[in-house]
Image 1 (cartoon, helix red, strand yellow):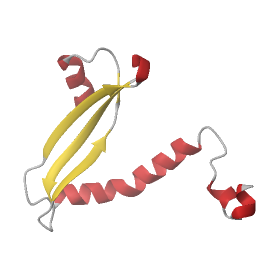
Image 2 (cartoon, helix red, strand yellow; image 1 turned 180 degrees about the vertical axis):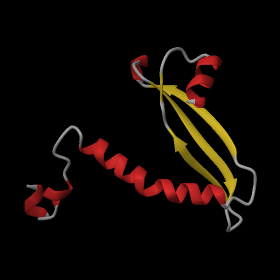
Image 3 (tube, helix red, strand yellow; image 1 turned 60 degrees about the vertical axis):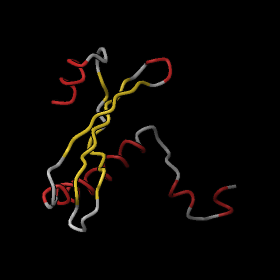
Image 4 (cartoon, helix red, strand yellow; image 1 turned 60 degrees about the horizontal axis):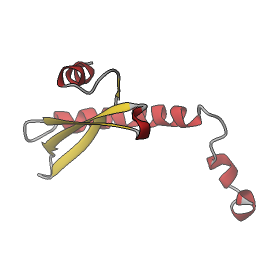
Length: 101
């Protein structure tokens, strides 16, 4: 039905369990040089913030890492730079270990 409405739809549908992962890695490879450039051209110090959370049922934990800086246009930018999966407890010491890695 989707293909009948739009013949290009078949190419856009992810067909395997690894499709999303491959897509994310391609986006990462594409954006990494741009992020490095934006950070290197910052007009301010770069501040880093962290936010940890778990999925429902506490099965998986994640640590969001965000860089905050003023870009070359003088605008404040909040740029997500990492989202590692947390291992272990959400104690301050463990979050620090995960953030450093």
